[in-house]
Length: 345
Ligand code: ATP
Image (cartoon, rainbow, N blue to C red; front, side):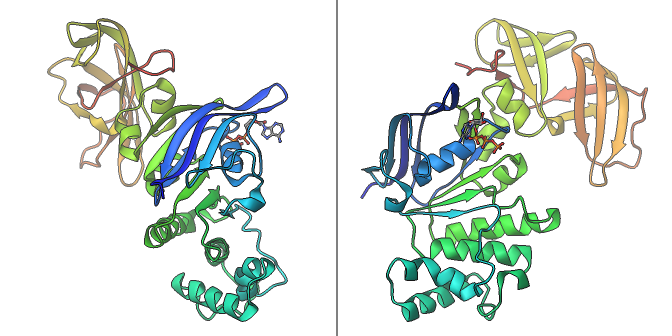
């Protein structure tokens, strides 16, 4: 038995001229939840479909549980899938929906139903087995879809944008439930979303994709605190990207000077809006408040400086700053980022 649940080596998937997946390498450990995140068309759904066996790779190798499944169809892989549409059978009871696959695969009907009942209870759905899917809330339907996928004890559970049909208020709760379930059952899960907050909330690790390639793989903290490219910095949360020059370990841009690592020369640094503090205007770097927005839990300012406009997220204070106010700035947590969108050394 290997600790690696899924391994991609040099995987490509072409559709005619389109390279949906353009040479991808990664490994997912057993019990890990890994999210594929990226803008529309970056190749995340294709990657998920390659794991499921719904697509076969044009090149490269896919291992699941150490076994080469590159040329095997979905039916011979033990992979469960939860779709955004839930794909429940509308005319079947919840219990029959969950027991369906084991019965179809030749299992005993009573046994399958007993197992389905057990799983429904574990998911807090006991007593709902006799209902039709249409008689459940969106969140409950989502849990039935999960129950239906895990009843088969899959090696890997795949989630394709599972929350896109759940209304915004429920989304937080359901995503926490999915994460809780995955951890309780020790499931290996691969999750696709284009919502960066959802990815940060549920994942052990995130794979950010861009044009069929992996831009960065890391924990939510890694990606947020140490994005390795302009693309990742911009895609995960808000980032202030500042162009300047490094000389002797100090990054300079107009009246800004920050300690950074790496070689001398032109450089780009990224600073998160909540890592900028606004102070009295008595020392450089200085700025002028251009706009101030009250967002309930925090203030959001745009501050004009000699090195560009900065987005600043600040706690609510008794006296909010108003446009035109002169401020001093303190920038923390600056990271050097690749200037061309590629990787830093
Ligand atoms: P979205 O968030 O919009 O679903 P995605 O990141 O999941 O995007 P994919 O669905 O993986 O992106 O698509 C990657 C690229 O491959 C796109 O350019 C898409 O148009 C193309 N593509 C995907 N499936 C096919 C197909 N069956 N035939 C032709 N081109 C395809």
